[in-house]
Length: 372
Ligand SMILES: Cc1cc2nc3c(=O)[nH]c(=O)nc-3n(C[C@H](O)[C@H](O)[C@H](O)COP(=O)(O)OP(=O)(O)OC[C@H]3O[C@@H](n4cnc5c(N)ncnc54)[C@H](O)[C@@H]3O)c2cc1C
Image 1: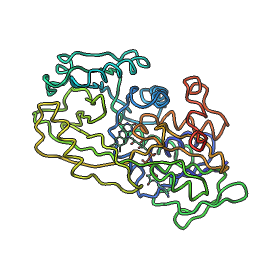
Image 2: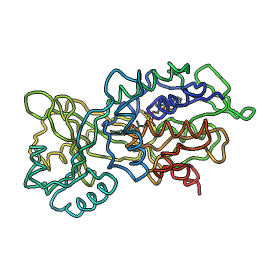
Image 3: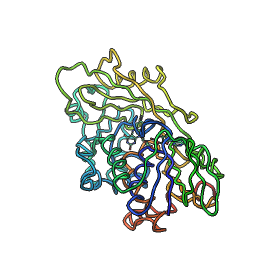
Image 4: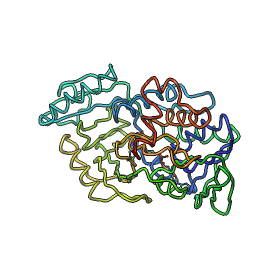
């Protein structure tokens, strides 16, 4: 079976890596560098408390891969400990209680902490404002570059191809398969895997498929100096329980986001200064930090379908087209399981048994739910 994967972000590379263990894959990436778009712009967090239960199960199913990657996958650890602390103000006490019940139901190690304990863990939190927190002790920082590079290297080691600066411009049905044109090259494939991130509906339309209603949403991030001397701070990642901001150590700086979600067309997105200003205001409102200057700011696209659950399945009306889309704000942490799921469906006709047992079924992540 010859397979074309469109998109060299974490979705396309994780799937191509798994597929390449069993067949011949050509991965096409439009940019000169894979990972230029969303994959290179994330906050790099592995948490089992974010997203709907299917997203959380997908993350959990990938933990072993992150902590014990296959031999020769990477020279560097893929994850490092980074507890998450969800915090709330006095006005958010109910939200904290609801979130604690929700998170700890699936992740028993999660527990609540008092305001004093929250401030002890992150001393810049304002003790007059913060009413308490929720700790997820087993969360992790992901080395996204090492993960992505491991997938890319593995694809090549397994004898498959990665072609960069190769934007797919035409996908035409051809004898039960597809003619795919990328750059000046046209080749025949049996299956096209649509892993084009924010452009998945564009690629779907190119192949004659109905859209899945994907909405790319801009999210801003920026780094700044915490105003302390010395090396990286031993703080958790601090996330507002209502997802209005987050911040965490990033080298000697802090990385923060206003958690904006502005719908936009798929494009090479840039940050807006107003979103950085909102982020600064929100972080300062719960801390004693005085953010005087921003070191670096950027934005990336988080693309969602209507139920905010990822899409991983065959197009029911367009034979030979497989979608991996809608990873929203969880595409990095779910990538090992999403790649494995796609390869099992494409090569074996059924999802992996462990994922099905966890509730990640072909129906839960398939396309039929979006076209009903
Ligand atoms: C600020 C921010 C913070 C985030 N934080 C986290 C986090 O902490 N944890 C987490 O798990 N996730 C996080 N995410 C989400 C995560 O980054 C995304 O879900 C993930 O990167 C999506 O990967 P992708 O491969 O689908 O998309 P992309 O990385 O965008 O890759 C799609 C690729 O397809 C290519 N392409 C498009 N059209 C064509 C074409 N015609 N031909 C060839 N190639 C094409 C594009 O050039 C692109 O490289 C965050 C996202 C943002 C923006």
